[in-house]
Image 1 (cartoon, one colour):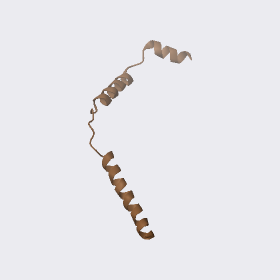
Image 2 (cartoon, rainbow, N blue to C red):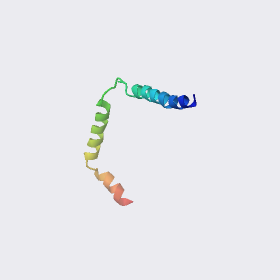
Image 3 (cartoon, helix red, strand yellow):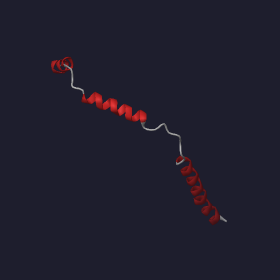
Image 4 (cartoon, rainbow, N blue to C red):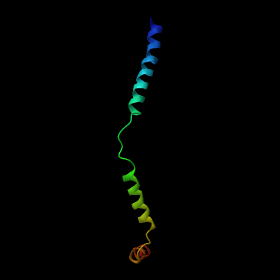
Length: 62
């Protein structure tokens, strides 16, 4: 009987892992990548801008 109990532990663990995996892998309604891509575009545009004369002076004064 004790051997059966030890065999049931991995069985229940496997069932639990299967249920957890199916729940984690479910299809969720996503909003897409639009907001992330828009934020990345704003970041790229900000990094491509040349520094203004005033910001360059403030960095060299310090």
